[in-house]
View 1 (cartoon, rainbow, N blue to C red):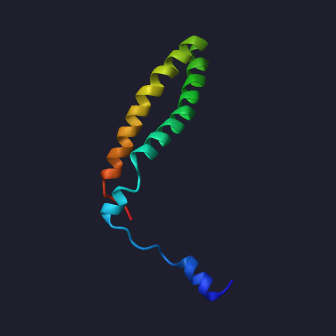
View 2: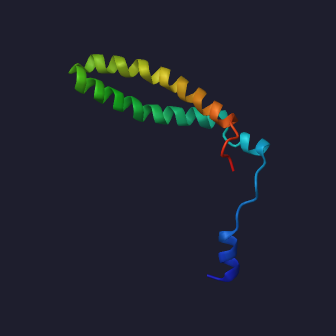
View 3: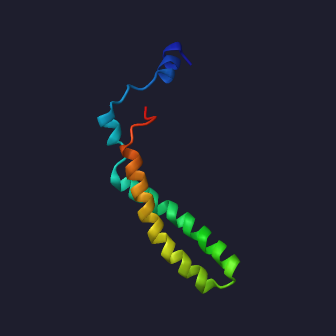
Length: 89
């Protein structure tokens, strides 16, 4: 590897201003992240509920309710944190 290549790899990216940074996480990205995380979380909730109750129908009921409420909560949480400047580069 040449010195120029090494220097290029080690070079810090240009600093982004707050206005650019606040727009870096688009709402649709937050929606997709919320959905993918909720799939994992809901499977976990269903398995735990089934283990505790011993009833698959009860576990599926719990999972179907929490998937919607937690997606809404996650989306709101993500959007609020995107507005907070604290510790952003």
